[in-house]
Length: 215
Ligand SMILES: [Fe+2]
Image (tube, rainbow, N blue to C red; front, top):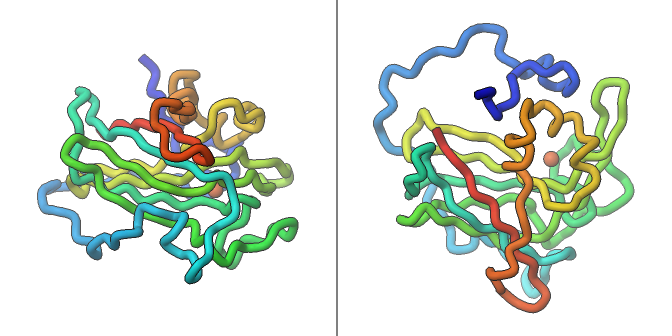
């Protein structure tokens, strides 16, 4: 069965020319040992509040993003550190190289959060739906579909997954050169979160379900 993962070097996504490793990977000798990281704060998972000014709230459609992290055998993985980063509702990042001038930064939105999976492998974030943004892919210009960046580490050092989540129904997904680096339809589908009408938060929130698998 073909791997659903993108190869590291995919020239159609130009940044991979510089980012792809030029040498074979080094095998980890010992994978044991916990993951050292600063203790989580009570609002780390809540991007609606974790960078807001006193009394302020970010602009944008409210989202609950939730799901399970499991291993390839379907067993839930507790204690996985999940980090999330994203653009604001207008498609802007708090990053010095973000020069998108069409929309401002949101003083009440930092665009980053983190959480740990619970004992059932479950996680959730509260956030806003990110806007699409323009980007250069070599000589080409295009639009990134709305997306959330995810990094998962754990429960041991050697298990790391960096990926992106997309939103069902977004017409930009089909035209995205980064999404196109995934070699299979199955892999592409796995990155598209579906709306979850059963996970009701409030009348003005939408819920999306996004499950992840760590090798
Ligand atoms: Fe991005």
